[in-house]
Image (cartoon, rainbow, N blue to C red):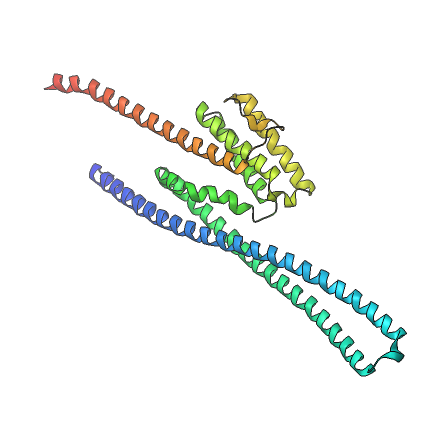
Amino acid sequence: MTPSLAQLAELVRQAEAKTRARKIEAETRQAAEHFRAAEQRSRQALERMRSARSSCARAVEQADADEQLLKDLVRKLAQFKSSLASGTDAEQLIATSEAEIARTRGQARSELEAAEKELAEARRELRAAVDAYRQHRRELERLTPELVEQFADADRLLWDAESHFPGGQLQLLAHEVEAGMSAFAHLVKLEQYARLKVWIGRFRFHQAGPDRDGEGSEEIQALAHKVFHQLKYLSRQHEPGYIEAFRQDFSTDWAGYVAEAQEQLVQAIEAQRRARAEAETRRAEATNGEEAPEAADVG
């Protein structure tokens, strides 16, 4: 390949890479918006289901009480049937009462079933949206890592989204810890400290929060045990700094704790990025300084 042809090939490669990067950025933003909308729909469906479950329980409880009262009244009617002004009216009222009680139960169950169906559909949509966003997000990080910080809010929402699925937050945390353990040693202490603080804060949030719906299963218990010991290992092995969340007697607003730790992590990553940029600038200046005398000698 001639030098000019090699330069042309490089120009084409760069143009293709830029075009692909712009496409991935647009697709990632679109996937993030779809993900946010799906999370909101699932959250609203969950609230409606909880409300329907509560109202259904009250309606069924009232229907049970009415049914018991009806049985008592029918029993008394049998005792005092000879004193009734009209036996036909009593029979009609009994039949009407039975129908009303059955209708109350049926309506309550239908409302609950509809809310559960809506929640199941919303969760399926959310799972698909989460998977799509993660796929685009990974491709974006590979092609244009400098844009990753723009999606920090959507990344944080992934943790909230997993709370829609029993045990989901713990499974997401386990995946992140497993994927990050090998690279943990290469992080600077400040980033190690912040990242570990985020992880242990999320673990304690899981322990204290509604995500414990699936905690009873042996699989979830084993996963929780594994994650906690992995985090303790990282803390002891690398000693990034004291983190009070490892103490079982320490309690706080875990959502706020995690949010603060995430902000510290963003600052640590940004500080490291600036340090690398400054180092590259100094190296470039030093290289230029060494090449300048040689150019003068040639002249």
